[in-house]
Length: 188
Image (cartoon, rainbow, N blue to C red):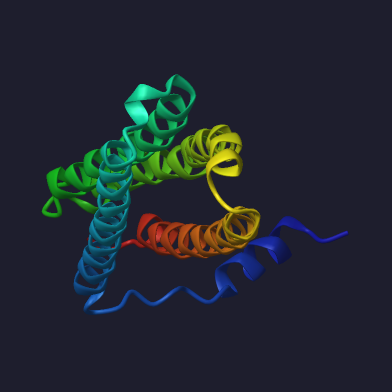
């Protein structure tokens, strides 16, 4: 059994992490990178939303309640995600980088927790609603499209969903890693 002095000695001998001289610059670069990725995400989501709205009017979907419901679920889930990302970008813009290290770290921890909630609660719900909307559309697609094209849509949708989930998962990991590094940094 080790004595208190041995433990104290080992504690004092631990290497101290070096604080980078340009730590605040690195933090700003990471935060700007996160903002840019969120803007790109919103651009893609907004484009998809506009395409779906165009599709809604192009096929006169509003005349069929089931098709309208499916498209509204898809469009609505995308709009909710756009709003979440917009609020998140605004939160980053409002963050005061001139605060002392402890206050800035507290803000980063709060932001980090919100992003975790977004990624692990809101994102799966949004994906499920989007997929539900698509599934609601399938009987209409089957009825109005050739068997080959319908099969193509189903298979491609499954492939796209798998790729999207993988891509979204990777992006979430990258973002959370960056936020965790910022949150754990000791510089502002």
